[in-house]
Figure 1 (cartoon, one colour):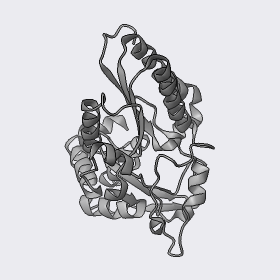
Figure 2 (tube, one colour; figure 1 turned 180 degrees about the horizontal axis):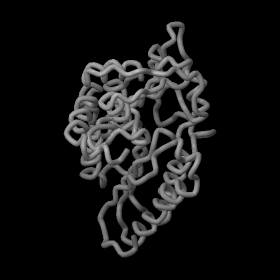
Figure 3 (tube, one colour; figure 1 turned 90 degrees about the horizontal axis):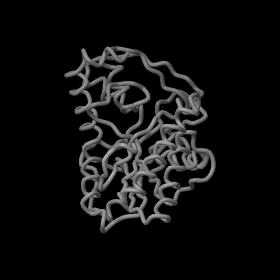
Figure 4 (cartoon, helix red, strand yellow; figure 1 turned 90 degrees about the vertical axis):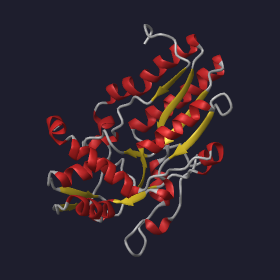
Length: 278
């Protein structure tokens, strides 16, 4: 990093993003996610650069999320209709991965205080779209699509094996559009934290995603129902985008059908190349 030339702005989106991997490979995750950001900040401080940091919705207290969102009488989470904003609790357990991202946020603020670094922190939910090739740790959407394409069986894990857990999903094109706007306006809007996600434009349960994947691929696959889940799992997450929308007049353009279609088309076009990664 020290040998790199000076940059006006650095977008730090490098991370080991798997929550489950962070349980097993603690040193690697800390070195990649936290120490990596600190090394970038040291360079930024010398060069007087700006930083846009891609953080995570995993900075929020997962135990509080589990208390807040419950299955209703219809065994569904959809009736919750609550979005999570920047004021949701960041105290408590969040996963090793989430802890490294929150720690990185705190270091960014500290370096900004020392050196007047201008920063933007985007706490992203699930990101998906082309160039994800179906591995589980890249996100559940591409993994679901690829499993249907290759007729590989899946499991509904946790919450009585219902497949009702819900996430919002942001198409990578929508994220890139936002970051481009943030770059252009960083001398006007800076030292801010935003939640960024698909929000009410783009969210889905695993069960609903299965129906879409079955329709687009024409393949039915078998599902195993597993009652128990990871200690780091959460039942529900939909982003409150109101703050980010108020600053940039931005909102996601693509819905879940767009996300699945674009990801599916890319996976099919690159099927032979992708297989070597499995």
